[in-house]
Image (tube, rainbow, N blue to C red; front, side):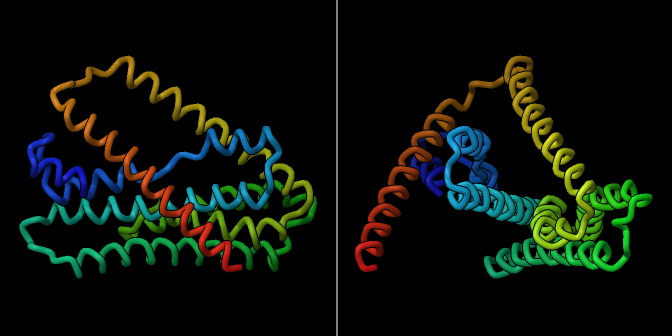
Length: 240
């Protein structure tokens, strides 16, 4: 909203409101990779690690749903959708993606619990199915016009709590190492790709005001939010 107001006051490049909301949704997702790595090195409390990681993944899910909603509104701008329809579309994408992901996760839990895949000669099949279920969740959500990333997120949460415990010991060790490897490769690839993109792409500096105003707005709002949150924590903490 500050970016939109900055455009109205000619402090920066003027963008339509919908595009400002898309920009806000795009940059609202935080990346806790560095923070979580520091937590692991310092041996921080498990609950603190879970809180930071959980807030980040839920924030990512909300940001993806908001961005897809705003993108759809921008594409159908001629239709004159009102605020109520925007909220309804956001809830449709988010709740639908979450429901499909949770549903696939519980189906996998029931399958691994009652199918008897934990015997020795079926452990390869057990591991393959465990890896393929999240991909199935992603494809199902995309086929329904929902968010596959949000769906696979909730599938992973359900499978971690319910499906993983139904695996055999050898399969648990294998899938843990496999997903840890995939996670490390994905994080490394993202940073490498960003570095190559910054170095090789031709960048435009025609909207420096937009960049500076956005950075100043983010820093200002983050400090205000932290200040308000600290006051609320101290206030409610003193009451308890």
